[in-house]
Amino acid sequence: MLDYGSYAYVRILDKSSRYPILKIAHRGDAKRHFISREFEMLRLLKTQPVVRVHEEPVSDEDGIFGFYMQKLSKISRIELAGRLEDLLDAIERVHEAGIAINDVSISNVMVDAQNNITLIDFGFAGRIGERIPSFFPPWKSRRALLSVEADNESIDEICKICKVSTLHN
Ligand SMILES: Nc1ncnc2c1ncn2[C@@H]1O[C@H](COP(=O)(O)OP(=O)(O)OP(=O)(O)O)[C@@H](O)[C@H]1O
Ligand SMILES: [Mg+2]
Image 1 (cartoon, rainbow, N blue to C red):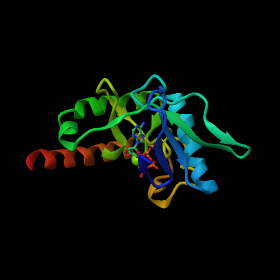
Image 2: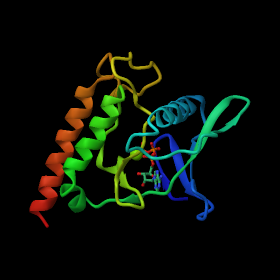
Image 3: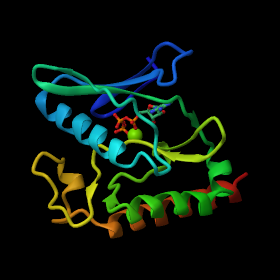
């Protein structure tokens, strides 16, 4: 296993494949909502700087519970501090496509093989202005609607964290 998140785990499979990373929902209906929403968002954003996903999701008779994606790498805070403009551009491109991310954080920023800033983790994302779905956890439901403002607040947080990391380096 590569990593374990709040609603899914991430595994690396066949390294020679174009989409070697598998993200699978933890057991439970609520977790599946996030995975299928994430898959839908990532497919919608396939020309934006977000992780590339295989068009065929993993599903059973109850629907989607996973998907395959390209392999990305972590980026250090220090490196991210020097690439904040690229991060802002990436997020802006997602907003221009009409989507609010609603989970902007350092752990959801990675780089691809060409070292391009690439965004992951779109389970809480949705169309800008969309009513927050009832299955979202309380800490993602403070506002009534999905908004760019929430992403902008998270960007401010990242900028602060990166500034501190740079000072202490
Ligand atoms: N395409 C990828 N390539 C390499 N590692 C990845 C990839 N996607 C995710 N990961 C790793 O797995 C971790 C969890 O992924 P992700 O954030 O999508 O899951 P999550 O269940 O939504 O987690 P959380 O809610 O804790 O952020 C990431 O922080 C990253 O370290
Ligand atoms: Mg995450």
